[in-house]
Amino acid sequence: MAVRQTARYNPRMITLLQGRLEEKHPTRVVVVCQGVGYEVHVPLSSFDRLPSPGTDCRLLIHHHIWPDGQALYGFATERERRLFRLLLEVSGIGPKTALSALSGLPASDLVAAVVQGDTKRLSTISGIGRKTAERMVVELRDRIRRGEAMEAVAAAGGGGPDPKLIDAMQALVSLGYKQAEAQRLLAAVPAETVAVSTVEEIIRAALRGH
Image (cartoon, rainbow, N blue to C red; front, top):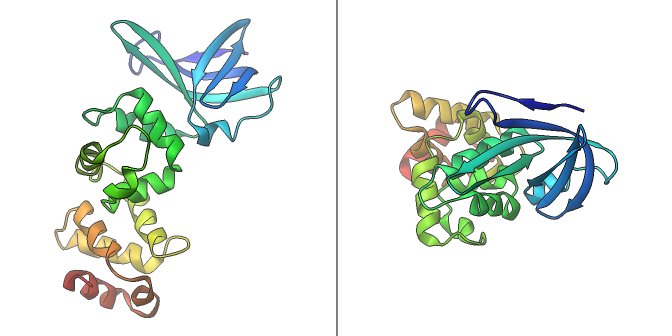
């Protein structure tokens, strides 16, 4: 099995590991590639998707290097790795806390909490206090991809993405609202209102604040 590398961050940084899963422990695994064992830290969400030890596995890697060392962080999906990297850009959040965030909440719930400004829920994650949760909302809300943000807001209304909420989001953005503000307005519209309203009525309810 080969270790694939990329020059995205550094010519020698590892971006993917594919090989035999030698050890499997919560938050830490060992993957053997071409006779070399790599220790990889993983969130619980990725750990749950891994096969049994002794079988082949594939992990997307964030190769973190700092002045005194380096470590590998592995993810089952690109979405998890991207959220991990976004979290690292928040002031006060390092790899350990970012991994804790992805272990404490599923990726979709983490996105929903950020776009809705739910600092109370974010503060329940180990290592994240009120001030850090507030920074997460301020620094990440406008950086979440629009499609993911729409799905998060729709899911908050119950069930899967609601086409009416997605259309309402697009309309508010076209009216000049920032994505984060549109998300906040729509998240405040009760699910029962969304269920019986047209897109236009949902927009009016969001702009009225109820």
